[in-house]
Image 1 (cartoon, rainbow, N blue to C red):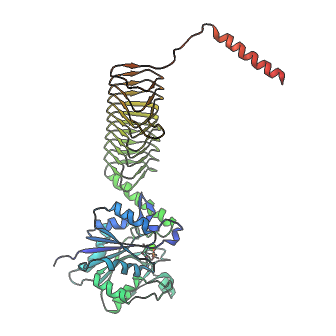
Image 2 (cartoon, rainbow, N blue to C red):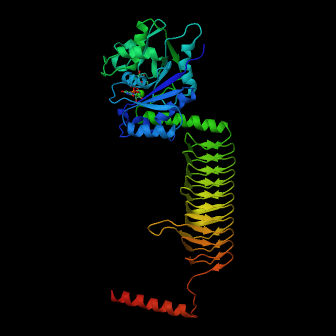
Image 3 (tube, rainbow, N blue to C red):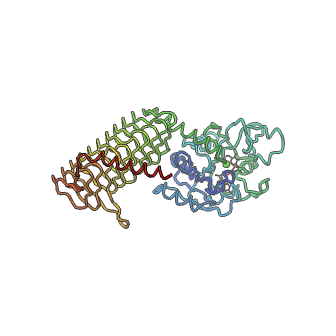
Length: 475
Ligand code: UD1
Ligand code: CA
């Protein structure tokens, strides 16, 4: 018998009132990705052929995110227009899945630590060779069950999930086995059960959890799949968001350390970051987005790198900020450098302190070691850019390109008024404002001639002192 394909329905339409936020709960970020991302990714990783995300509150933000993040993957949305409870949300999801969908895994969208293996474990009892279950639910045992739905059993058999507000006795309240919010069954079973449900509970909502009592009444076998409380923690408020973020971060850091990266405590590494063996990330560094650090490269204290490719053996010295940039192998950046979007620093190139690049390419071995603004530039191999150099790229209306040839030398405190080109191996004298192209091998120099007046300094000083004395006498 072939294993039926599984469709996941991720419930993500709730407002998340307890977050006290204008942002929908599932768009709050954990390690750089919105909450909703994690459940969807876990469902795909677990082999679900189709993932339907039920959206509602704030869907104008959730839907575009899902489209972007899961482009080309089998992820769709269903809309729950009014949030009438998890049972109603599940119905909205079931309404859009295809008639061929056999098995359905319904999952809360606010449980980001869940992994593919946990989801597979929830589905497994449906395939048990001797006695397949009709319905499987993920449970865990927690020290503090307040607020969760409790797993109620008669003898060994699960008969009901009762929400915290609907508990009646102290015995029920003392139950520490709770519902984690993951349910697997056939699409037909969910459809039949949900058709019978109404809002007969303390919150006046349609509870998905009532499917359990429905199946128990019909004599169907219900399997509780006990999983670790650490992977099933839900996010309802900001305190839980912080707790779950810390757990996920610890999981990510541990993974990269075991793969050979050195990561100091206090560094932060987002979910999509990739670290090669022998990469080093020092404390206070924040690696965000799709940043990738190759073998032997070092990201120093306090650096903030967002979507940056760091080449093998490159050294990013402390407090460098870089966004959407590429740093070549063995390049040296910082301290205190700023690489803005579309900066591309070549192999062995140097970008020193207080140097800002924007949409600028530096070829192999080029250097800009101190205090410069290099915007919209193309800098050739081995060129040297002196301290205080400015690429004047903006005329108030448009941006223009400054091109510096290979081996050229730009003296300190020069301005290059773009569009302008300095040829290969040319020399620009210190303090020059370059407004015309400089041919290869030429020297460009444009500054007022210096005049020395012999013996003038003592006279100047005497005059200044006399003026000061005269002013003070008047007071
Ligand atoms: C739910 C369970 C509870 C379980 C807990 C585990 C129910 C009735 N209760 O409670 O037994 O212990 O999860 O974390 O299911 N949602 C919608 N539409 C709605 C309401 C909710 O899409 O109308 C979504 C939310 O966005 C959320 C998920 O369903 O992702 C769970 O809803 P939430 O309100 O957080 O349920 P809990 O009170 O945590
Ligand atoms: Ca919840």
